[in-house]
Length: 294
Image (cartoon, rainbow, N blue to C red; front, side, top):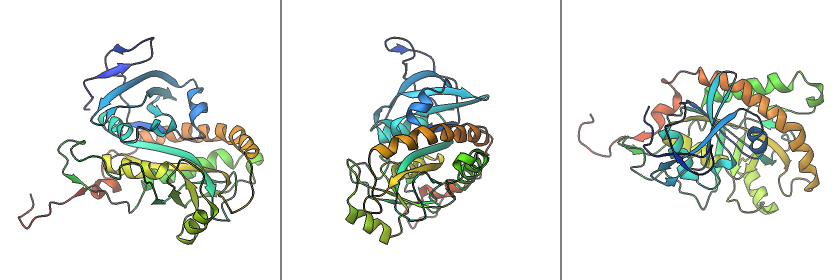
């Protein structure tokens, strides 16, 4: 596994140059419902950053649970979008779970429901669409296809483990688990207008959030198999009334359940085959030349 030469451990006061952390082929990228509960889980053992071709990575946590080593990055990378995914690529990660809360657009997808998206519409306006050429080494011209947008094996695991956690608990009887959904990534920086949501609905969006579209795209570009779990925290603007006070109850009830879904999923991700995955043939564009291909 190729590891960066410069690794800064933050687990002790100050910055120490040290040996790399233990390896892991699985990562969890935290969104709203995973940030604090994962940080307080007791699973995280070490913090570090690495240098990438896009600058320093965000803080990366090394953790272990049920014998499975993994890396965790909270807050979707805290604004270091490209460096986050270059760092995971450098560390040898092959499987990743993402997550976020979202606004429900589809009337069948109500507050507290869980959605495992299968496709994406990306209205990002401030982040690079493409990992900078040359950042991944000599891998050819990376121009990713997103059909399918997420890894089918990880997608299935998240569906099955959501059922395994939620269905036995009668207090979750009102919660639906949607096996498919189109997630719209809005530009971010604010909630959407009712007119924007009406447009997203018209073009086929089911839920709206601000970050997982970037993760879907970057994961495919760097060769990491990825799928995500969405919890609907509120109706999207203009769909139904809602207030800030309604969000607290969603987080308090569903964040612990989401953590258990992640826990149950990690051993299955670690056991997935490293090769023969759908994303392998959807990254590198062939040379645009009339010459015979190698």
